[in-house]
Length: 100
Image 1 (tube, rainbow, N blue to C red):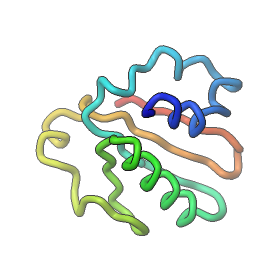
Image 2: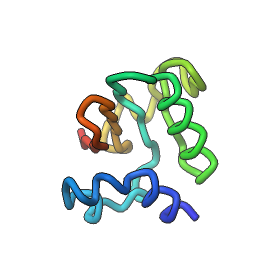
Image 3: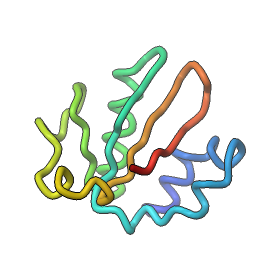
């Protein structure tokens, strides 16, 4: 279920880059919704948080709507490599993934 949902969520990235295929999402403890730019940011953030949590991922969302944490978890502060950092741009029309 997790992989099929994320394939649908990240479908446009497959056409704009090959990096998603090499990333094992289950190897990360957290998925951090890092940045959303462009229009309808609240709706986009709500959609991402809801669907990723329903798929069983531990989502770190520091902004409303659907805020999941007030601050980064302690273990994530100590080791930023525990998370996959997601950003979305409505202006550019593509998904992006940034690893720290």
